[in-house]
Amino acid sequence: MTGAGRAAGWPDGLLSTLEQVFVTFLPESAPAAGRLARRAADILDETADPADLRLLKLAIRSLEHPPLLLASAGRWGRFSSFDQAAREGVLLAWSTHPLGRLRTAYQALRRFALFLALADDGDGDGGPPANPLWQRIGYAPAEMPPVPERAVRVLEVDPRGTGTLELEADAVIVGSGAGGGLIAARLAAAGLDVLVVEAGPYRPEAHMSRLEGQAFGDLYLDRGTTSSADLGVTILAGTGLGGGTTINWTTSLEPTREMRSEWAAAHGLAGFEGAEGDADFARLRVELDLPPPTVIPPKDRLILDGAATLGWEAAPNER
Image (cartoon, rainbow, N blue to C red):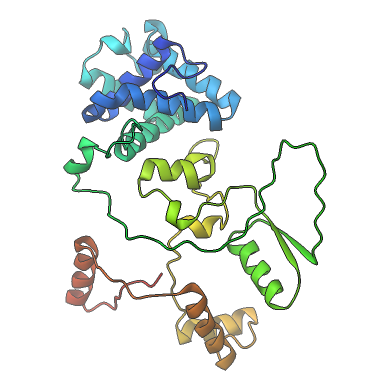
């Protein structure tokens, strides 16, 4: 990131307009809006498709051109000269505009504004994070107990290197996530020499940040910005050793007896409903280390109490 400096490819006027957009979505973010706008510009420069980024910049620039603003939002003037209500009206007009590119621009700007403001952990000066919005929503970063280091040997390869690296293995698995990691473990347990190739870095749990903004940058593909072209679907994919298993809670629901019988009959899953299936689930419980929850927050206790009042079956998830 470029820190306090101007983001590459973003003139001061464009950044100023982006800052105004962020404040419109969340007025409480005004004190940090300039820094958040630069951070958004940095992320977009690093992760966005160049063609899509050019169109987004054009949309932002149009906010300061009265004829273009009249065409896109039915208002004459400059976005920066409007009051809060008028600026909200412009963005709401974009959210339902017949032109898909304007709807996409609205979604992109809204997501960046809200996420960066609520996940903001300060200016990175090493001091304690102090986000005034956290107090408004009753949030405070958890004090995490020390996490022991795990002895994981990782061979890091410089992708820019010009030399040749030769390794020998019985099997090569590309990707260390839920699929690749499982296959590698089974093959290794069977006595094969297994090589797992992973594009992302290895981040030990003891070194993972407990702050949302930094963690998204460290652990998520494209810093959590990956999505479909129209932003209709957000794809939160992990990047690094473990892939999605590093960032997901792995909520685990054991199929009921009735479901197992149905799947065995409908899909030919031999052994799924009998003792063989029982053994598989018992093994998974050990491998996944499924503990009962130690704390049930008030919002979840409300769901359990409501279900009990209605006579519905409910219980805490295992993960």
